[in-house]
Each structure stands twice: as structure tokens, then as C-alpha cells.
Length: 261
Image (cartoon, rainbow, N blue to C red; front, side, top):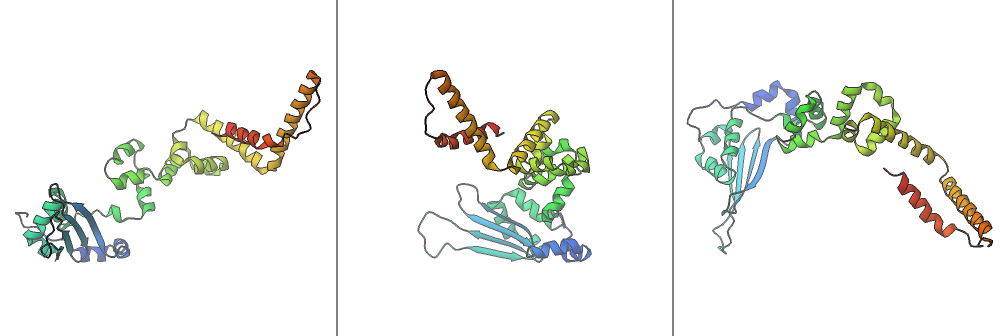
């Protein structure tokens, strides 16, 4: 427990002055922090910490391999912020199960050191990250699971691409279509020459899709028939009466495979 007296944070007064954050917390049932964890080996105890706007709740489950009936049961402590500061038992259990860092976080929570960023909607988090230096993104992704998830968001890389090339790129339908298929992050790191080649290929595929799909198969059939006729003429044999339709599916599949990228 902390040796120096601290001033307990008035969470209700803070939320009254910040209605936007107040609405976010209400949408999450008032939960500001929650974590689960196992005690270090050899203990197998399991614990839960939940901090809301009114109290700090600690729950733990004693787990043993021995068959002892009636002596092992879950425990629970519910403290106000003020009571938790003086509750040595709750602090000792948090330290035993979760470690000193988690206990320090809970004690700092009493001073108002709250991670409000994690409670913001994802679109706002992405918007904030979009104003950061691009070179800082790899380092930010190592900070936490939340930051890594934000750094991988497709919308974030779309904003980076717009910042670099301007809003005019949104008028390029081929680019938008390619980004929807590949992802904006891959488009962002693709060099300009390769990107132009892929856009040209995408446009060609789009042109073929607009036509009747049977035209491609018919053209392949005519090509096969012409090949058979030329072979028959040079060899002096008549062309077989069997239609080359059985090979049509295989030919079409090989053509699609050649055009994939």
C-alpha cells in the first residue's frame, strides 16, 4: 500500500464536466477498467478486477488439485475508491494474482490516471492516429494490443493515402476498387509503376466482366476448332466429329488462372 497520502479522484465531478466521456462510460455499463488473470506458478488461482465509476471489485477463485470439499470457495471484495486505498487485503490479493504493475495501475487510477483513449470509438481513435508521423506507426504498434489493432485498420491507411495524394484520388474508381480488394495498406506501399500496372489490369478485367461471359468461351472454342482444322489439313486426316466442349471448362479455368494476380 502507498505510504504517502493521496487525493482521491472525484470521478463523478469529472464526468459531469465532460458529458461526451460520460455518455461513453454509460454505454459500457459504467466499467472503466477490467482484467482477468492467473496467479503465477505454482499457484493456479484465478482473479478478476473490475473498476467502475462507483467502486473497485476484486474477485478470486482458489484452485487446488486436492479434493477438499467445503474449504475452497470464491472470494469477492467491493470497495469504494477511498476504502480501496486503505484495504490491505484487496491490495495484497491483486499483487499476488496480477503483480505489482497492476496494483500500481489501480492505485494511480485513484489519482485520476485513467486511460480515456481506450474508451473512445474506433473511428475517433483512427482519426487521432492519422495525424501522427507515419514513421512512428511501427513503434506505436508495439505499445499495446489496442494500438497494434488501430495501426492495422484499413481506414487508417486510407487516410494516410489521402494525406499523401490528396482527395482527388477518391475520384479514381479503379483505385478504389483495387483498394477494396487488396487493402489500403498494400496500395499505400505499392510503388507507382506497379500500381499503374495493376490498375490497368484491373480495368481490363472489369471490361471483360461487363461483356457476356459466354463470348470468351465461344472465342476459345473457335480457336480450338481452327487448330483442329489446320492439323487435319496438314496431316491429311479429317477433323473428328466430337466437339471440343469437354475441354472448354479446363481451357476457361487456365485462362482465369493466367489473368489472376
